[in-house]
Picture 1 (spheres, helix red, strand yellow):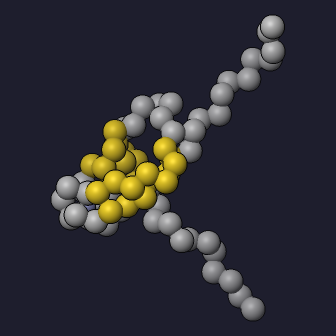
Picture 2 (cartoon, rainbow, N blue to C red):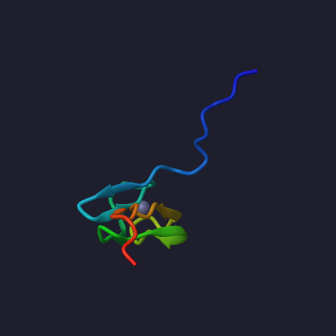
Length: 68
Ligand SMILES: [Zn+2]
C-alpha cells in the first residue's frame, strides 16, 4: 500500500512578516514577529472570506547553557 505524504493542512505562506492566505494567496491573515508562535489559530481572510487555521512554529530558544 502506498501512502501519500501527509498534507492535511494547507501550507502557510509567510512573506515579509505576514501570513498570506493560502486560498487566494493575496490576503494578509496575520502579522508575525520573528518570535511569534501560533498554534491552531483560525483566521478569516478579508479578501476571500475563507477561514484558515494558522500554525507557526516557535523558534527554538538559543541554548546558551544553564547559568544559574
Ligand atoms: Zn484569502
